[in-house]
Amino acid sequence: MAQHSPARTRVCPDCDGFPRVAISTGTRLPDGSRATFRVACRRCDGTGHTTTSASVALGQQERV
Image (cartoon, rainbow, N blue to C red; front, side, top):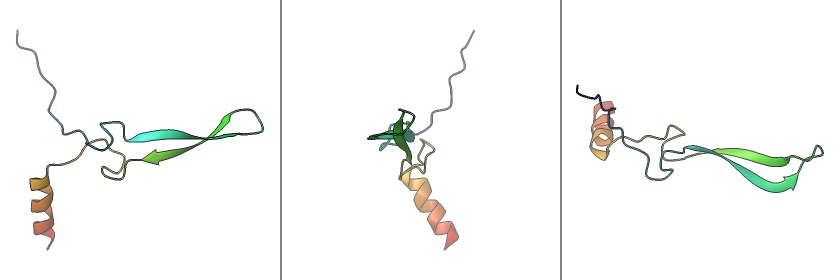
């Protein structure tokens, strides 16, 4: 029986599919936990996927 393969999506080359991360600042809070802040990938806006350059260019042409 044939197996279904998932649709091939283009993973963001900057974040490699991990679009949101928590970075420790190195300081500790009064309760002993580490102070962190969350950062999203700038290129894919935190989605983890990008579009091909041809479709982006086509989309920009349609808006003009």
